[in-house]
Structure formats: C-alpha cells, structure tokens
Length: 196
Image (cartoon, rainbow, N blue to C red; front, side, top):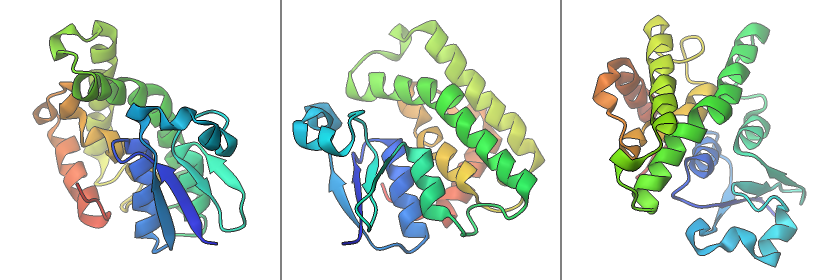
C-alpha cells in the first residue's frame, strides 16, 4: 500500500503536504476529510489520529504521522527541500516552528473566520488582526535579504509559510502592503505544484 494523505482541501496545512508530495514525485492517495462537516471527529478518523486533526498520513508501512510540518520533514528527508548545511537546516526549522506558533494562529484563523464562518473583517478581534499583520511584516522584512526564506532556493520553510500567506487576503489582510511577500509568493508558486 502506498502513501495515504488525509486532508481537507480548504486547509493550507493539508495542502502543503500535498504540494510537497507532488514536488517530490511521491505516489500518494488523497483522502478528502471535510472539516466543516465534522469528519475529523468520527470514530473512524479518531482511530487514525486521536487528536482529531488533519493532515495525517498513513505511511506505506502502515504507520500514521500527524502534524503538517512533521509530515513535511518526513516526506522531504534527503531531498533538496531540506538544506544540507546544518545552520541553514536549523534556520528552516526556525521558520517552520514560527509558522505554527506566530503566523498560522492569526493569518489562518482570520481567513477561516471570514471565509468559512462569514464573520465581517471589521469584527475580527483586534489582537488577531495585529498579530497577523505583524507576522506578514516579519516575512516582508526577512525577504529583503533574499528570494527565499533560507538561502537562495526553495525549502520547506517556504512551503510551510506560503500555504496561508498566499490566502491572507481572504482574512482581510492587504497583501499589497507587503510587496516583497507578494513577489516571494509568485516565486514559490512558480516552483511548487500549486493548483487552485
């Protein structure tokens, strides 16, 4: 049995796993799990991932693995998406940890509330908006130093961060305020198999 990816196509965390598998030419089966219908809370899904979250993969040997960035690291082991240099690899991990702690909880949550819950942008919690804008500004500042987040080529740091950054406008963030981020999104989209 090959790699199976359980994910919801509205989730950037799920899509970055799909993009990585495709970028690496991995053979996989995508199993759509609808978050909005509560499909991550069924007994069948909880048997796969007791945390009740997507993405989760079942590896060809039958072992499950959850958490998007852990999955990315496992799938990309030995590929050019992980820098060979130890310090560059640590920088990549720094960005990936930052993405889950200081970016996704604000940018992705704002997007979900506006796009899928129908909340007006002007009624979002100010802290959510402020921290999302701060995360986008952090990316803008970092991208002044190069074309990608680590070194001069695509890494998992870019894959992890582009997923929700490219859709930040759906959460009320004005990406035109971040021209370096916009240019970076275009560069990443040009080398990743991203399909809308």
